[in-house]
Image (tube, rainbow, N blue to C red; front, side, top):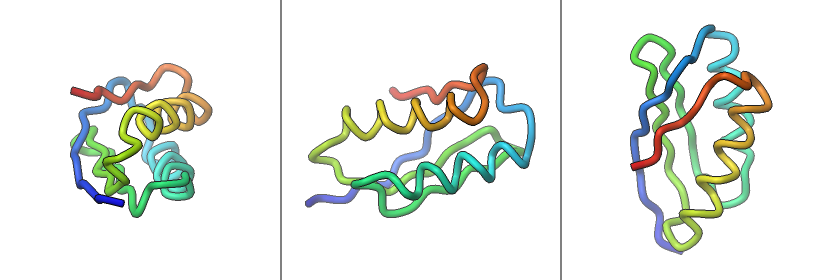
Length: 76
């Protein structure tokens, strides 16, 4: 397993409490080592298994939308 740390922009993140919920949900995903969501800068920093990047990014987006349907994570 090769771990990468990436920072992603977020769109339409409206509340700090939602950011905390997203952080907790993403942190629990398989293959994710850690996740930090910074409400003020609208950024998500994630350390995850690079071997399953697409699968993990899809799961991250799904968890974010469960908390706040209008919010998106911008993956490069």
